[in-house]
Image 1 (cartoon, rainbow, N blue to C red):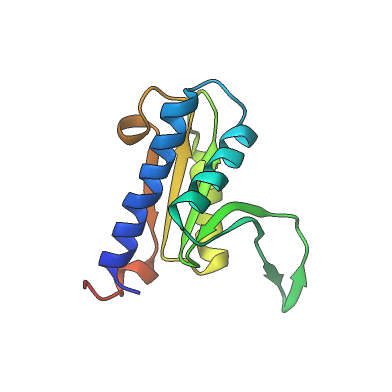
Image 2: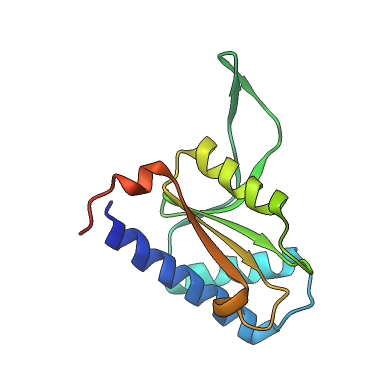
Length: 136
């Protein structure tokens, strides 16, 4: 995996989000966007896991805390979906925690309750792991 690969994958995933948003518009439940994005990923041939259980280990014990990431794309990109009036710091913290627990280099927080996904409906986050990936 390289930064270039991950950045291209990010671009492709955001494109899928834009396609879904253009078809449906804002104002629906997160679960509706989730189902549509699942179909768009299949259509685009993007490999993913949906509603992935995020493992939690505390004091060397695996706990079932019922945390679920919306999508893990190509085993390296975490996607967290929202359909809210405003993205709050707790939403960002949630994604950052998922990145850490899944040991993923990059994540995207997508809010479908917006007028334009590209300009004000998505934000990407990277971890230390991303910084150490090769450029090409």
